[in-house]
Image (cartoon, rainbow, N blue to C red; front, side, top):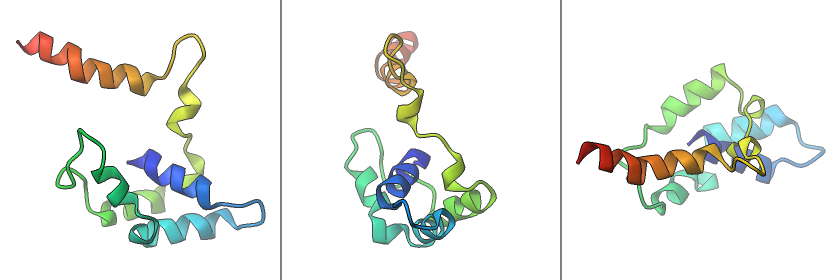
Length: 99
């Protein structure tokens, strides 16, 4: 979810914009940026599993959006993306361990 806020921030921030103003607008009005609607189209996420926007508003007031690194920045050429390995582990390895 944090990565969705980050992606929205980087998509709407331009070179001349004030980063705090852009992030505050996204945090205060996530419905204008369709953050929750975009997540509901993903397969393993229910909209009932997501916290209220107020929770993220409080979180991002303490930790500014622009100080986080996008998940795509953690990917390397040889090792791939950690989030993909985590998704595979949840989808395949965990059910095998439970069964």
